[in-house]
Length: 113
Image (tube, rainbow, N blue to C red; front, side):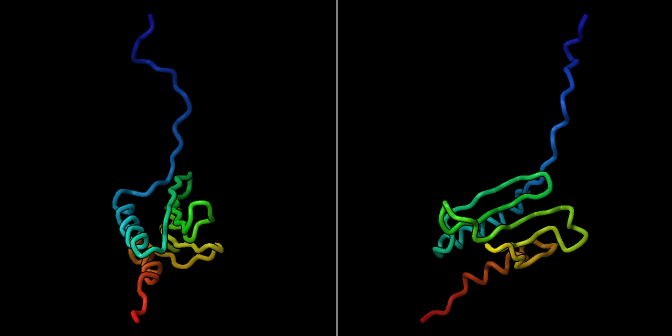
């Protein structure tokens, strides 16, 4: 007689890296301010095996202007958060997300005529 509680065991689910709710709150706050300023228009979120990526676009069909990456394996080295520009250059890297995002907040500061 088979027990109803025994299920066939399949492959274990893969672990993926994702942004936590508090991290997304910080990122989306900046995103909202940049949309209001007319700088950004669209975004995409990718969850991968070793990284989570928040991509920012000026137009939908383009390459991303910036990528905000979370790589937990780099936590004890350069820091798990990074802002990467269009050309792949790392603009800022660190352990604190708010500090890393300051490099993008400078775009909001404009001279008033």
